Structures are given as C-alpha cells and as structure tokens.
Length: 413
Image (cartoon, rainbow, N blue to C red):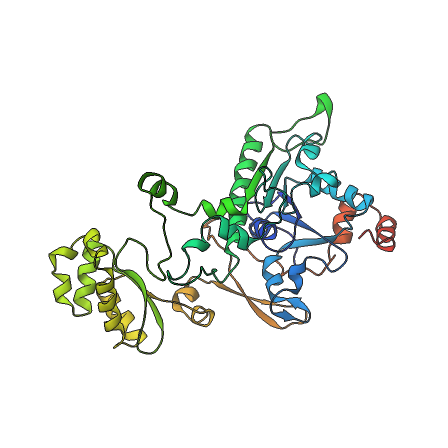
C-alpha cells in the first residue's frame, strides 16, 4: 500500500476534525486529489461511521470509501496533551476541516481566531447545521434538518402525501461540496496574498491571508432551490410537491412500463414534444395548436401524462427506450445499483474501481469524480485502521518513540 500522495493537491496538508458525513466527505475529496489528510479520531472506537450500515469484519463498507487516502491518528481530545498535539497539527495544516457544534473547538483552544492569532494563513472550513452565527447556531443540526429547513423536503414527494427524503444523506453531501469549493477559493486567496505561513511570529512572520469558510447545512441546500425566492416574492407562488413531474414544465415525469420498470421521459422542449407524440402514435396531440408551447401544455398536464402512461402500459422497458431514443427524445431508466454496475456507459467511463481489503478479498469502489485530463484523482488506499498512522504522523511532528509509547500508556492516543 503506497502512501505517497500525488495529484493537483499534492503538498497540501489537511487536518480533519470531524465525524460521520459532512466534514469527512469534504476532506475525502481533497484526499482523492492528492492532499495529505490527517483524520483525528477518538481512541475509543473512532468515527461512528466505521459502524454504519453494511459491515465487513466489523467495519462499515462505507468507511472504505469515505476515508480512502486518509491517515488515521487517534487523540483523546478531552486531555490537555491531546488538544496540544491537535493544535500543533492544526498550525501546520494548510486547511482545517471540522464539523463539530460551534464553540467546541474554542473550548479546545483550536478555534479559528485562536489559531489565526498564531498562523495568519489559517484556513478553516466549518460545517454545521446552522452556521457559526445566528440564534440557532448552538442547536444540533443533521443533514435531515438542513434538507427540511433549506426547502428540499417540502418540494419532494407527492402532493397528497407528507414530504419524503432523498434516499441518501444529500444535505450533508451538498454541504461538503460547498466546503470543498470554499476551501479551494480560500487557498487561492492565501497563495496570492503571501502563501503558506513560514512558522515564525512577530516581525519575522510571513504568511498569506487565511479565512474561515462558514458552511451551514441548511444554506447549502437552500442554494440549490432554483427560483423559489423570486417566484414567491414577485408572484406569491409557493412551489409544492409534484411527485415525479418537473413543476411547470410539461411533459417531464416518471412513468411505469408494462414490465414494472420506471422510466423518466423529458419531452418538455417544443420540438421534442412533437417528436414524442409522434413516437407514441398520438398525432392528434402532436399537431394540436394549443400544445405547441409549454404554457399551453401546462394547462393540459394530466391529459398529456395520461397519454404517455397509456403508451408505456403497452411497452417493455427496453422497447420504450429504443423507440424514444430513435425519436431523439430524452429518456432514461431509473437505475438501481445493479443496473449501474452492468451499464455500458458506466463501464465505458470506468466508474468502478477494483481494490482489495487487507485480507485479500475483492471490493469495488465508486471511481473518483470529476475526471481531470492531466491530474486525475486516485484511490491509493482504502479507509485506514483506527490509529494506523499514529507513529508516522506523530513522529513527523518530532515526538520520539518513547513519547508515543507514553501517549499510548496514558490513553492520549
């Protein structure tokens, strides 16, 4: 297992202070593109995600993806010495990523202002439910809460039923992506204003300008909500749940074929609608002057959807796909993971990587995106064992083997 990072972020050191999804997903992407990510975990079991969902030999399969390319260092953050080690790592890092409740790092002397007072180039990405300010800052905030407050849950599902959740932790993941974007912009700003801190203080200090990237889960979701705000402000429109349909754009919906498969058909462009109606042998609708434009089609949404579903009732999924693709109508089957792993497009794009666990058994992981022509990301190793890199990382900080042995004996690591 090689542990020499390469990639566009090679040479960038990241300290991860966080658990579960938002913070770790943010640092995971940096690790995939070459950053050295040092993940701090509790000696008592580590990140709870190690035990989430489907396990292999007691460790989550999710862990192999979420922590790939990271170095695991255990620290008892309730101890003064553990906090001191973390502080040394933080001051030496280019980027710190954390997703504790606001105020926790300040108690450990690891807050943004506390670190910036020593290292002016400190970049800290802070992911929390509600952000670092405001009346809700101290409340616990999980992805589900961010999805609800940010507007996503309200518009998800069928109009006659309660809102539903997307089947993944989308709120956490969207926040993580905002964290990555913010980190890259902050790193660029630091470098053009003086670069990395030279480790000195006072008049000898040389450093670019760091900054805090304050990511709130609910705001990250809110950022995706399209025209929600101006539609309400100007027209008083509250967007509601519309099931599988794209609201106000017709036809674009989910339909079921004769073999019970689900298919998405997007015939909402004017020319596309005409081709779609011809393909499903509804020339009457194809040539109806009231349906030439979207505003007219919206008024007859139920009729159009019924016509498309009536055609799908007579078609097997593959026949439906072939017919509509031949007519140049945007169409797609709703994929399960089984569909993905045998699909020619996924395979042609090399979207699955083959790896081995420590015991030699095989495992496929999702490939790294985005795909970059000159500096692609890569998986160098799977999620590490708890504390696997204690000796290497602490040794690089200057601690001796005797120091590390004492830390172990005193349960600091």
